[in-house]
Length: 75
Image (cartoon, rainbow, N blue to C red; front, side, top):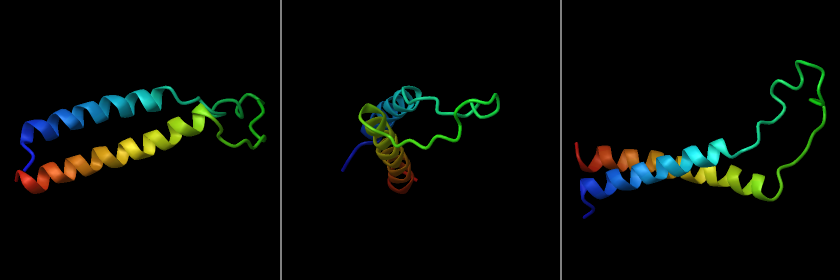
């Protein structure tokens, strides 16, 4: 059985990795369309951008899973 400290440490590690994955992603065309930028261009995610995108989804799922596991096991 996993100890509470191990789950907490894993949750901290996953949260830091999730923050880094989100911060390293590209900004996109959020404000570009407001100022007449190329907001109408559709482009797909490739390479490192795609890897960071999927990593953020996986890390978010792991973070939520660890939180639920923590609640279930140690209520």
